[in-house]
Image: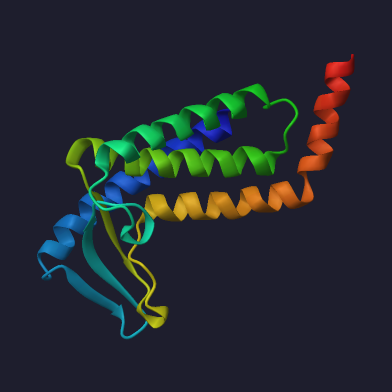
Length: 161
């Protein structure tokens, strides 16, 4: 549980600090800064929707939905902490930390600050919290594909005792 708490806290702190720094830095550069021409740039965006700008201006819907997801993920992680692998624990901590990072933005300002822009493939502008959620989701997918059955058998064996 300590490692999970550290990951959640790190995600939140890194996200908050990066958003503060990027907001100030990009304000002095007209909202755009080229790191690697035609490949990767910093681009200030205030996102009022979900990923890729979907469902714009649904602030309170996202606050409620994100809050529910965070609570469910935390409760499930705590209840299964003795039977799940380290991969599950890390993936859930990353997802929770990233979700909290963006939730803080939505509650405080009504927008999520995004700034990483992968121009080479014209990918959506994203932030540190999005990165934690994405990497956590990929790790969760790996866990489900390769480890879930083993952990589920442990849980069933424990319940039978």
